Amino acid sequence: MHHDDAFIPYTGTTFTTEESAQRSLDYFNFHNRRRSVREYSDRPVPLEVIEQVIKTAGTAPSGAHKQPWTFCLVSNPDTKKAIREAAEAEEYESYTKRMSDQWLKDLEPFGTNWKKPFLEIAPYLIIVFKRAYEMVDGEKWQNYYVNESVGIACGMLISAIHNAGLVTLTHTPSPMNFLTKILDRPDNERPFLLLPVGYPKEGVQVPNLERKNFDEICQKYD
Ligand code: IYR
Image 1 (cartoon, rainbow, N blue to C red):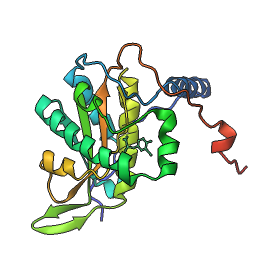
Image 2: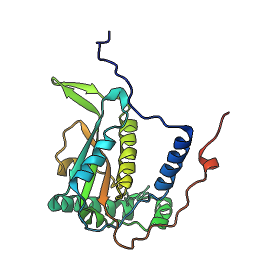
Image 3: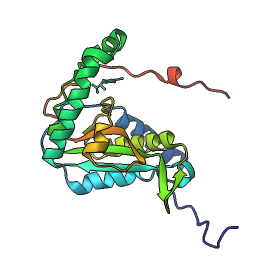
């Protein structure tokens, strides 16, 4: 059933208790300063850094290891402009007609609106596509747990971006089928998330938010 090299030794590192405690604390403290940033500097970002963070996202677990994701990396100014214009057209409709009063009220603390200049200013846009199925010899092979898999990969991507000293934002223009068109994606792919990536605009401010405390997010069963 298995060929000889179907399994190999696990090479991940384990740590002493003290090292584990320190590393988990350091990791939390570093991530606790991550924020979604909506205003970007046009300072260039080295391509190899962006490629590396995408590689990290690609290490995510996925249903049956199908890796059902494609990360489109956009730096071309014309493409960014096309994406901005299409996103703003949809967002204008959303903000002025489609979103409920309650939704608009819930967004007030973030100061968002239909204008999305970051789509042109940020040096890179990463548009994540989920792959619902693969075409194999003209046949459709369904992928598994696609939303979970791609969601996890996006979480790892955000973590890797923060680790590299860059900022991002999980932008969700809605509907976002315009991305399929502009980026000429195949039928088996659907846009999942759009992330501008870059350095923060100098002196940028972010909403004064508080995170839930530990007892609010964790229920222990010991
Ligand atoms: N997609 C819109 C609206 C929006 C919705 C939620 I929920 C947010 O947390 C933030 C924005 C936009 O990107 O502006």
